[in-house]
Length: 141
Image (cartoon, rainbow, N blue to C red):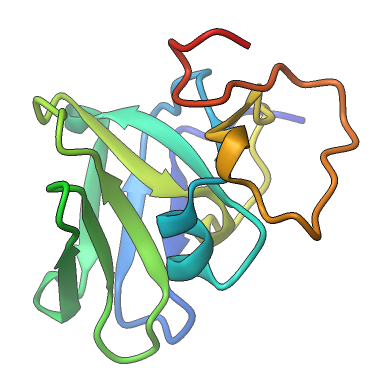
């Protein structure tokens, strides 16, 4: 697969669009209860980009932010509800975490980890060989 100079993404309705020039190799499936509830799925899959490599190209005024009790920010489209961005309370703003499912094209990377495994849905079995961490990426597998 040839690598494009940038990758484009958007929400379901297209009112919010973005471009990312370089996706960092760390990407993973988060099984925490907040991600499961926010995405209505067994887990959420996020990619990361340095802030200078990520830009909103349309619809910044359509973004809504939910701030959880722990300070984590989840950004979504006010019209269609698509989850787009995630910012942990510990973020210094140097990285942007975005939902991989909103990308418009394939990327040459794959998720490399499952995090917050101890909170995973009991009805879902992890069947791949990726490392699994009970908490975040820095906890013991």
